[in-house]
Length: 288
Image 1 (cartoon, rainbow, N blue to C red):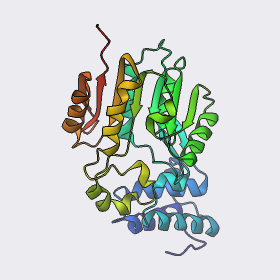
Image 2 (image 1 turned 180 degrees about the vertical axis):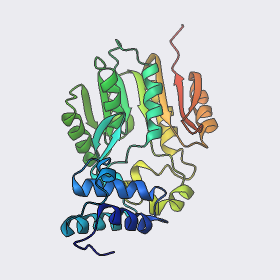
Image 3 (image 1 turned 90 degrees about the vertical axis):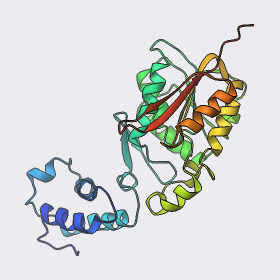
Image 4 (image 1 turned 60 degrees about the vertical axis):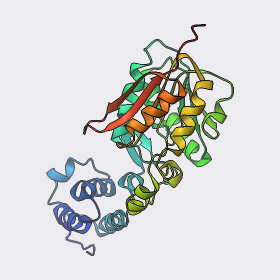
């Protein structure tokens, strides 16, 4: 479709929705979000002004966005932002796009961190900072350390923290627990890479614009999770909790890793569609 002087909002939405079918499971929604972005409007205005003419230069910009979406680029990257836990976060190709299912990890973490608990809390592989910032927004007295092995990702996370006026998070560069030093934490949370090699191959088109470092978990998807569970006891305070997001087929395997490492009170929680998504365990207090 070529931009023309007489293109209306409705024309562009109709044509772009058809263009995106087959490339997106949410073609109409994607088209609406991209057009509202190109116009500088709120999405609801598209319905009230459906017959309004769109200037050719704006239509051209919108259609370029549609073609990028059709090529597989996430809508959040095209918009430059994504909402998570009611927070508007900057998103780039350097970070994983925050997913709704990760809000389950935040919910579980908040149950283990009372409002007056100062922590400290450790967020491993923070990416955009979504989890750390969500926890900070709900637990302003808690001190939070957030680590990542990507300086580019940490720059995005720092930008998001500054934009939200959140100064309680200590962002550190490092490979999982190595950035934490000798400190022990009341709570450790992580959304590590957990796609299996086969899942990655099947979803490369869908996920190719996001950092593979944040997605690929090795042959069985548990490479990073094994390491986190094995190293967590040395970084957890007595009675501290470890919470990990994982793939919906990995719940039993992750729970066994927790059990073998010596964790207690192990539980797996389901996300809104009912799929196992988060496993937690408590590091026992020394009763000697």
